[in-house]
Image (tube, helix red, strand yellow):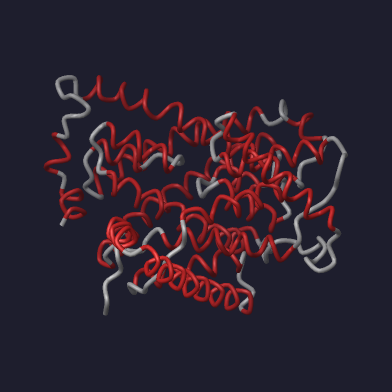
Length: 390
């Protein structure tokens, strides 16, 4: 079988023959979308949860394991993420402002969960999986994929290992949690509520407002330097319009399904070019980490739910570190409080982003006083790191 080109090889060939390579990549993208649609249709036919996201993600990931020629352009996810942000913002209501103080106990529980899960996952990755301490620390944080890669690389972590662990964590949590909630809580999670008008019946004002929220919101997210800016900006702008009562529109169902399809496809494409043996090893390690995370999620949600009376499923979705967009979509499918779930995921991302670096520096001072954090001493002898570099 012809090997899949790595990103640097793609860039080199594109520079040498841009016309030929662009046609090749677009052909691969069309094939990737066809595979993703096949997975979505199958999941929909089987009445599985969130078929357009989970089905596409599953089939594309399997294609990556089989070393198929798969490709998705880097710029395709942001506009689709913006559509999901607009959709999430449409779920906000004026009562959100009144609930912020009520949510303080659950936000405190989120802080405890983030610290406990990060510590347990870091210990697991170091003691059980064999990663060096810095790689295990930043690979085990419950959020902030891009930020953890950058912070870890600056301190001598295995950058590829951190990236693969976070990608595998998101994929496994997103895939497993809807089924777990169905089995344990008996809640139906069949997909996005198709109550909005279809694309052929929607008025032109719906498309205009969708475009306005997506474009202005994305720009606002970048100017304000929001985390997950392509999602948070449109979500906040859409929420302001809906909370103020200026509009009650929702994006057409077909556009929402296509956005979910692209998000699932991009999640699966992250594993393209990675050796199947390495994908298998990282998935096996990530399964253990996911089991730890889900156990802590349910335990924390159970305790917090006892004191607050909030349904366990809603708290699980608010705490589960599976990605803001993905968990919010599950919340939509569950008819849970999307504003509650999205607010807690935003808080989790901020906690991880702001707390990871100083906590790691404190741990270095306490446990390795004579070792410089950039020395890479442990990484040189880490079996897991050596296996990734082979």
